[in-house]
Image (cartoon, rainbow, N blue to C red; front, side, top):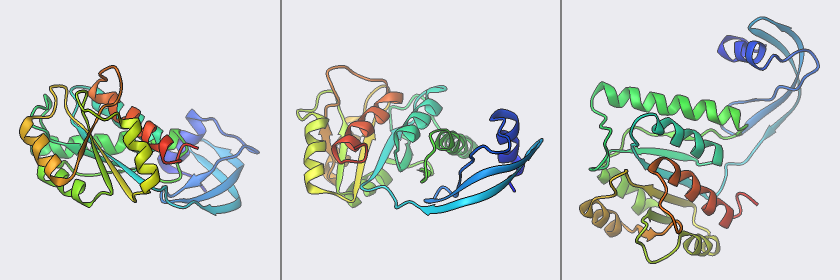
Length: 230
């Protein structure tokens, strides 16, 4: 039986009826392949055809996303989720226009998690992304130290991201962290702190992307290089 919010979505938005497929997932790799046997407003009865367990994607790709301004934040989360990013870290960078404090931080994290959940369902992901609490630069530096490879997206960097990603494919790191700065760029102090932790500057391409789109593009290039989009 599928009821509640998911049941309402399935019957009123998707308009699923008897005989149609409806796969269910727990967002942690387990999928039940089902067929609808009966449909009522807000409620579906399902018959399970098969159960599958999908392994966690590897290497794990995290994006540290400096908080974009306005509604571009949710756009960034949605596109990164659709691409396949595993962990999304909202970052309170020094030059962020949007500032999360107190209750606003809790609301912001909740909005990002909701956007990620909806995008994960729309893109039919078996593993849903983790959206962490708001991170300081010190916390981000800790993630850099723990990663197999950490790249700072920097339009002035000497090395192109595609070359560094190709190197990552050969080295096969377990975790890759991509760091996206705010509209005003990463401050010199933050940049130095992240480099000292082990991050490497990476030039994304010949043009400069918005803070809200750079993470998804970078993740797509990295995932292609390491075989996750093969």
